[in-house]
Length: 204
Image 1: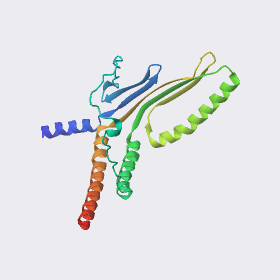
Image 2: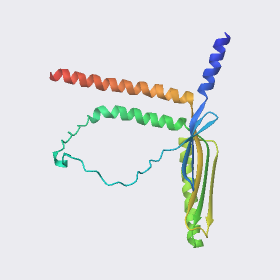
Image 3: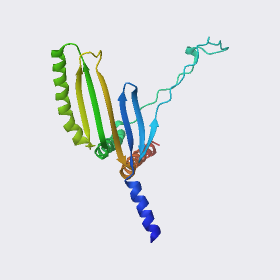
Image 4: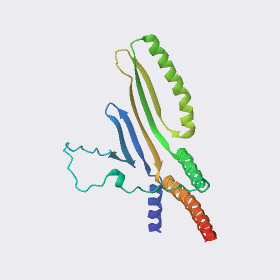
């Protein structure tokens, strides 16, 4: 009995384990950290170092471009077979969108400009855009905390943006979505394969 209880507690903790990403943008550029429960794992795309320029070596017996064999162009599949998979993908994205949660969103915009009148007009337009955008975002996602600041700097040379936010999805919901839509995609794929095999047999 104790073993089942421990297993149940472990499964429960795994189901509510938050997975996601911490995104931020500032003067250092775009930064992302992977969130796995309480852990923060830095994520960065490795930069490829350019090797010093060297004189190209001459290759003997290198075929000319015109002598290289041309690869055949692949033909596309029927759009009727492709549509069911697109439908599954769109449903998945729609369901995923409603499952994602923004724990917090912080945006700070510093408007630059020398003319107070022009800067005031721009300030009003941006706030109007933000007021129209937030209700749409809140209908699509769960946003727990949000903070938007817009300030003006007449001495700045360019407009600057600082943004940060955490987007998470529980492990249980991720598994549920993967299983549900994975089965649907597999079912549609098998239908397509079955119809193709039937068409081939009829032509033979």
